[in-house]
Image (cartoon, rainbow, N blue to C red; front, side, top):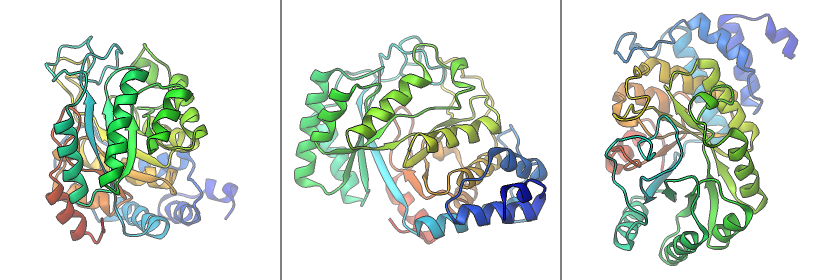
Length: 348
């Protein structure tokens, strides 16, 4: 079916055409995804349990289509990763959502370098649990080369005892710094776009979208894969959420993490209303149409979702997850995640 012929479709016929395209790995146009969402009419802003029938109507059909695309293009293995906070707090940037900015007063834990004891305890726990990827994540605009060399020592020692793939999230690094990480065994770099290009300037003024894209390009040039997604529920529109997914896809991201905003007291977004579970499920199902070949990774904020909504997401487009604790909020216990994935037929 040609693009022109799809343009005239509505409802179930439009969904069937977009599903057919996505099963071939072809991304769905955002405006047609929004047409589907308008027909469904379920995109809300209140965090309530209303409309909790996850399987009926066009909404259920959309989630089923997203699940079929996930299964055909990615199989039944959940791509799990976990993180350790390598440096916490004292960040000079002004990102409105972030507890670690020194411009906000959130009471988050502050330290310059994770202890070796904590690092290796966290690493070994994740390795024993069968987690596939492990990342050091650091606060701040960027990590200095002297500290990168210290982290690289941890990475090299990790490689001696673990088969986990190694990732890093250390800010807006240059080529030399990224090469240092690559030489230590890091094969995936994480640099979130955070939100769409059209919305980002309202949330952060101390660095730009181009700064992030430059880091992503440099990471790819030294041989790394890239993981780049963002946060939903920061006041953006559904269009802007899908634009973020498309922009991450077009930047070459292998994995698109989807975080739910956790409004933290002391940040400028502390009073923003939570988006509904149904809105979250709708968003990730549409992201699967927009980015059929990428891993859609459910990340921070999972702990506030009901089991029913989470199951619908795992059978509605999601094929990856961050497990364990997040940076400044509690995540999901790995044993609970293992049981949850198994209950929907996903293997670790």
